[in-house]
Figure 1 (cartoon, rainbow, N blue to C red):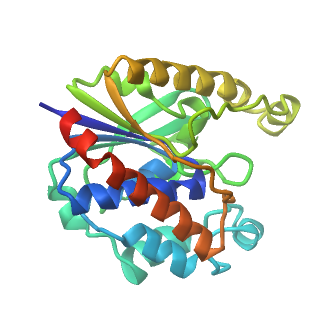
Figure 2: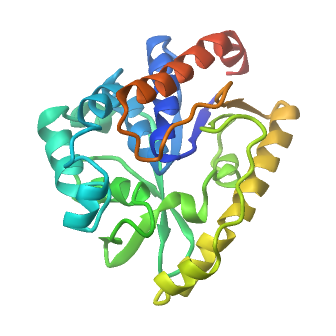
Amino acid sequence: MKTGLLLEGGAMRGMYTAGVLDNFMEHNIKIDGIVGVSAGALFGMNYKSKQIGRVIRYNKKYAGNKNYMGLYSFLTTGNIMNEEFCFKKIVNELDPIDYETFKNTEVEFYAVVTNIETGKAEYIKIDDLKDKNNLEILRASGSMPFVSKPVIVNDKKYLDGGIADSIPIDKIMNMGFDKVIVVLTRPDGYKKKKTNQVFPKIYYRKYPKFAEAINNRYKKYNNELEKISKLEKEGKILVIRPSKFVKIKRIEKNSSKLQEMYDLGKEDTIKLLDKINEFK
């Protein structure tokens, strides 16, 4: 039996996912494949590298650092998430990725990105984070539109995977897994609202298909939530979602808020451990 894990994004709401995954590792819950979107990919890769506690540790330590992510980084580099600090200094020096474990762990790992020229999602397998292109795909998956420069990999321009496919339930259901677990970062009942339709068309006028994807995102997201709810009721998938609302900013610098979201992920997973083990 093969189990697939689908990880929604959501910027710092992803601390919830980090808590879920740390519990998975602590309780030896085996996953065979992961599809991660945006923060789901950036934080989810730590399951494959088997680094319990890494996500909450480096985020709490550096969230208040102006060189990590935020307005200062955006104004000085054009990216709200600082490429040099996040994808060189942290991953290699300050809180290094275990590259060898990532490479040698038999978990298929896919990061979702949006091709800004086609407006379509691409699901790219990540095998080796020492490969610069693989690390760049991870960076692209979490690069939010409007506040990030496109990430170029093999002459293709990418941004946040959540734009074209926020919760790729269709994709993972067709990847050959016998069981699928979905980790969401918003409580039950959430629906995405329609956003300003004009600004994306102006800002991304050179990439009209990407602008269209941004404008249609709310519809696709809500449709995916409906499909997930239906599959959950039918017992075909297991869903882990926040049991309560936590007010947290997309670029949250308050370490106590990060801890609160992380702790909720751990608490919710502990309550579901028996159900998770039975499902698998």
